[in-house]
Image: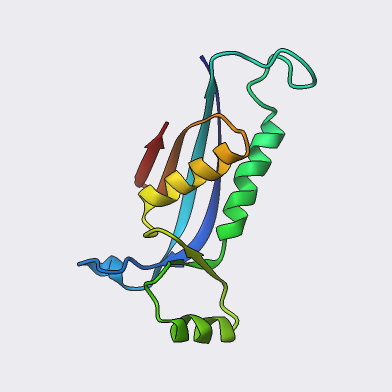
Length: 139
């Protein structure tokens, strides 16, 4: 089995609706995402012969996705009133409305699904919301 690993980071705010602690309030994180690729065989032809994937291609895909979420307010769909969303957007804030609760676990799965849809053989995603705590998604 062969594998690659790269990482990126992004800053964003979020809150957890219907939560019982501090995280129900708006707060931010310096999210660190570590993505692992794994496949049984190396590529056999072309410029990526004897590679899992070119590191440049891999890094660009992960960093591009992190950039989409950088300096945005991650909002679970349906947790804010339409008037609140309109007011925030009217003030020029960047919002990313997602169809799931914005936990580290769900963000790890989101990265995995998006990258797998691009054809990357993602085997694991570690999503750190603090330097010492991360959620892990595994294939």
